[in-house]
Length: 256
Length: 320
Image: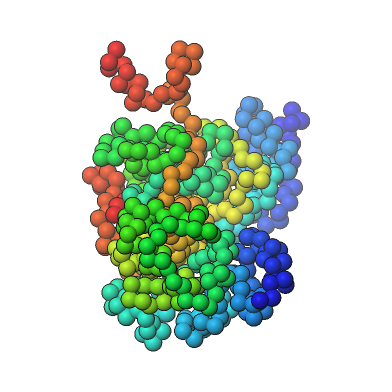
């Protein structure tokens, strides 16, 4: 497997560098060199290029995936195309964090996975995955890894019609259930646009904001509040509870 | 007396030879009057000591209204303002004068069901627009409301929970609504503020007299006043500025959100939108039928703040 030359490469390429690699063509060259070892740092195996024709479009930038507009390039998703015709063309800036996790094919290599139908418990490398989404929304009985992850091609997702879905196209997967969000995302009412408002539309992929296994955003600390204006600050020695709002003062004065 | 005579001498030997005779005469005459006026003269004379020079101080005094300046005058003005900013803040900045893009009318939409009250937009705005760090001027206020209430009198923008969203609360950011019928413009007695062709209400800071009528007229509390001389740490100054937007201001003038004119007129997105971690904000050209904002306006239930005032804001709120 040629592990010895590859390990140091991974150690050298820290997270910061890998993000830069997306814009450079250098990143790809490294991947091509490592192809023999079946271990790519950032992206999917290039063996699958034939099955995924949209990869051919952007040979220089694999990560920045341009959504194909013509019908020929979308053999797998006819339903989708009919469903929301007329959305503006866009580019995806996805998988910025892809370097943080390992490719599935590194362990699940070439062998068709055989998931156990009975045991519903994450083991070994997968214990860090928080499956709140599945537990709360769908129930663990019917909904499991293999609903979304392809058993025959580990580096791809799989839709409900057994079609392969690229990790950069996760909106096709999520949209199977969250169709309203998907529609809003395609037309621009959901999600986030970056870079410009006028030219080529570049939008963030679902997984840039939502963790796929726990999609709800977690509460986070807010930035500090603005300073209270003069008159809204009470003297601390008199009011040990600290500054209060005008409205509180108004209510207070009414009651006393 | 020697102090008082100094300014007149500098004017008689101007550095720039292209100053017309008439202008020179005007300046000399006024300078003489000021010199005779005692107290007033000392301030001008003090400015003479600055590297900008006395002629700069005079140029600033006689600077025309933004809309009346010729191209040549504008160029000179921008260069002078850059010089002044370097003296004041110790950093070279670029003040641009990008005109509005034709066929563009800016609009903003905000999804209040997505906003979680992180206040990232507030701080990104302060960094982008060179607001005074002392008085902490902020263009965006994130109101916290009870979940099933729209009573803005009970809204609180000083909330400081450990984590947001706080249970039972919703968040409602408010900034300049860029009205089509702006009451602040009507209120201004000196026409220092006006609506640009792309729908943005702007201020000529050098023309503003600081009467604060516009702040009283604005129903959205969008206008902020510089009560003190703005102070910004040198490393925090954003050097890419626009004359009408985020160039360094002075004490005693109004300022307001301009939808980041310096960015949006060059095709970039406003700073608040880029900073928003939830993607609640949508910005674009409302005249473009394919734009995202048009999709929101046509397909979502949108509303505007205080519509009954007929200010026609170009800032829509929606929820889903």
